[in-house]
Image (cartoon, rainbow, N blue to C red; front, side, top):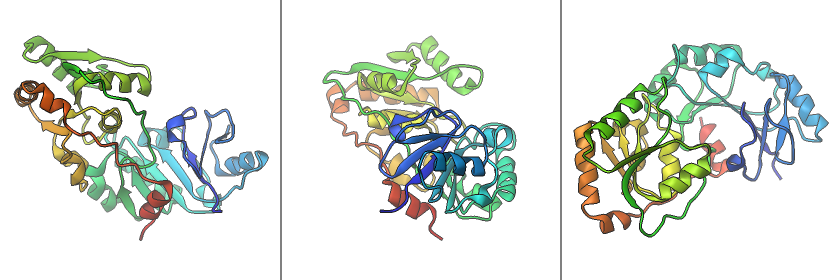
Length: 296
């Protein structure tokens, strides 16, 4: 039986990331059969924590981080790890000079490969900066709560998400739709992925407003909940994964006027809209994901 892979991250235990052969490790975990707490951000401390828990301190290490964490709370001592090291990087669309932060960290802490979580459109730019193989394989190791779509979903365009200071484009679009009043529209915030999934399943159509070049969690959350979505952005967000942009349950719009016209057209035939098939997200099995990520 192969050694389990270790997923190092900075969040609390994530039940939807749990799968056979994957152990979560990190500073905010409390320990258990599928997780190990590491109080100090160093690989040697990680190895000691694993040994204390009766686990092997070797195997594939998936190091999930982002440019902000690479500056503020970097994991150190990667050369001490006994096994392949995969840096799984998110949020390359945020902050100041994120590619500089990623490149500098990899010079100091070598990894064998890099996997982009939700920035497939940036794949070429990242490859030009780094010396190791770089791939974008959405949705990587992530999983999302499923929901059963109601037989008669509300004929409203639903948007779920924050409208805070870090989301000006999203806020402007939501306020424009509310002010214009040309399509039935509902904005909501939720406190958990499960709550969001239940809302998606109750609505005929979901609005997804990605930030910059981010193919976001919401893109796959909506799929998992069984609802069609309209993405306010360019289909180029999917990079080389054209099959994602061309799914029958995914629509695209780049202006408010184009969005309103699309929504009105879809709402004019509610039975046809309800009949659109929504396949689950294209999840990766762990062994296949690692094989693809480490390919030469």
